[in-house]
Image (cartoon, rainbow, N blue to C red):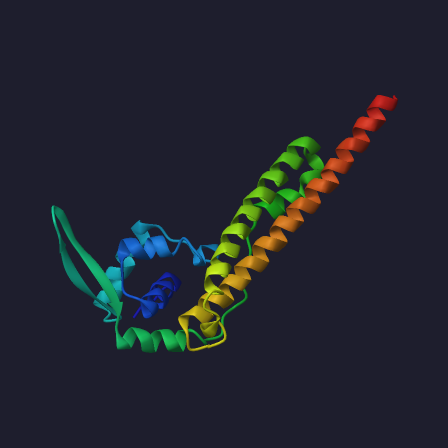
Amino acid sequence: MTVTTLDYVLLGLLAVKSYTGYDLGRVMRSPISFFWEARYSQIYPELSKLETQGLVTYQAVAQHELPDKKIYTITEAGRALLRTWAVEPIEPPVIRDELVIKAYSLWMADPESARDLFHYHEQYHFSKLQQYEEVQRRLEESPEDLNDPTSPVFAQYIILQRGLGFEREYAAWCQWVVARLEQAIQLSSSASADS
């Protein structure tokens, strides 16, 4: 049996609730999108494979003037596999961040263009942070499940904390780089004006 990480993501979502393939793609956009993304063209073949392997089942629901939609549900075999996988050791992730690589070569770039690039990323990560903070507010409206490790809300909350920390730190780093570049641009302007 071949099970990919995307398969485990799908099983994890289906362990909480039954979904159509379309709904799974929508749910993957938030709040888990900061650590895993997939396109519909990836999701549907994986659901078919999981169904063939007996890890999910589906119920076909007729729709007026549309093809039947399939609502997927995790099987007991899928739950057992997910329970085992959830605590298996993993290798540390390989990080590939193009902005960090660009930062390494920033000394070669025009400071104003570099400032604009980092300002864009600062705004992007700040926007993501605001989205995650809104999800956090909604989850904290029902605090009883936040500390119950047998609740899906607990799992959502702990991964949300990871996303919040990541976006907060990334936005702060970009802001710091922008401030350093802005300072260098001002010093350069002052030096040019003095000569």
